[in-house]
Image (cartoon, rainbow, N blue to C red):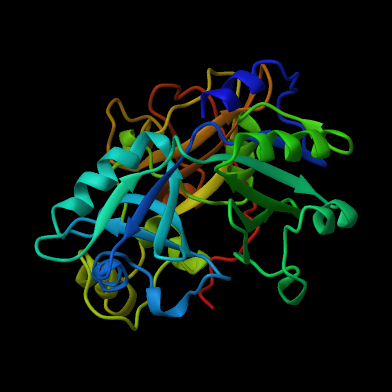
Length: 335
């Protein structure tokens, strides 16, 4: 949708506006999974229970190796004739190739449709705008992962960040999307794409980047706390590892939200290590990070629980700077 990209170049945006703001989802990709066997195929490959969703409610899910290490995390939306997996553009090709290996004789079609749909993220407490844009069905107002679909558009409510309601809008008609953008511009502030990344981090939503592919078992990234796994469904790659960690083992790593100041912004995959160590000792890795200001960065990282909570960990590249833990918007206790 080159016309959409061209339109965005004409729009003025601000970075990291927190309240009543919107941005283009230029780094978000979509993978279509269709065909007669699509439902059974995904049920056998993904961590969550496809039978528990429908066209009005999406879900988190993931795909892992046999060792339980995740290749990707995504939101799954059921549409007429198939499913759409929403994820960073940077991992769409890898996930498509991974799924392709298991199709064999199944009647399943995979297609990267990232260039066919474009998206907008909205953060607002403006009830009138939510109603005007038909962002939630009346019966599902306030429901997490509720979906409203029309001929050209999909509206998805996602986890709030700092109490702010958030939505994703995807549309395959550039003119319609431009019209929506202009309507929103009358009441909200346009941000650059970093708004989406910031709010995913604030909401404690893990993202798998190419640099962290196969780095984490899903419980390490708190995905089980975000309803991203079913422990009652049948087998899928990595299921034994995930189940063993829940029923027989003790979780030794989890994902944390933290800030770190006075250094360049960390990158996904950067190592954390024990204070005083002269090597990357496997204590943890950065999941995602964003620069808040010239002096402060916000990040999600997966690390060993005991040294993290004893304040014994630092970034390997910047051991001189302390890491300050922040409170996640959800509990570590399983529901």
